[in-house]
Image (tube, rainbow, N blue to C red; front, side):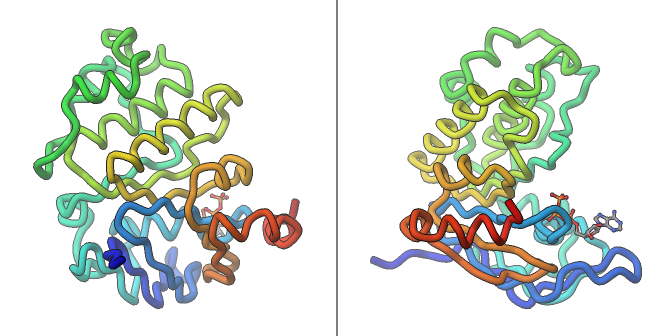
Length: 235
Ligand code: ATP
């Protein structure tokens, strides 16, 4: 069967000022696939997501999204191609309530989830509809951050450490959400430190070290590669 490429990253370099952080990242993500970037602290995973989203001022190489070269596009144009980003800090507006946070981002494409679909996926957000951003738990904030992307019509979701700081039961809930999004046809690229979580949700893993992809594993490889993965992650 033919699978189409949703995202193709080629020889991607990026710098913070004079500091050269990405050294030729190469990987791709097929439509409908869930791919995780794994690697130690400081390997360049977050920077890769920022470079894909157009949030790194100095970058070079190629980032093709749905066949469109985006390396010279500003972040707002990249977002309008249907790629939604949830940063590590989640970016919930603390003075706005759940409903306001949800409705704030502009709809960029047709086919976004309705608020009904969203509350079906995240019933606890409906219960918290008029609660202020500051009153939400970490898990609720993470769910709201994902939910508001789904409303915009983005089909490609980029998540930076969605499980960070969350209790195990909430981590499982996020895992089930990602599985349901996969079933709905979304494509997902995420950064994870939690190896067990990553192996439960992702189809493929790109191991990042010093701003490069040094290995790619499929879900089927994982069981046979636990020792190798642990050594990559320094566990
Ligand atoms: P982490 O899990 O710690 O976020 P990471 O793999 O996502 O790890 P990055 O955050 O992409 O790593 O960082 C890659 C390198 O870039 C690190 O050496 C880091 O110190 C450096 N770096 C990150 N942000 C900045 C910044 N704003 N200015 C300068 N250097 C930065």
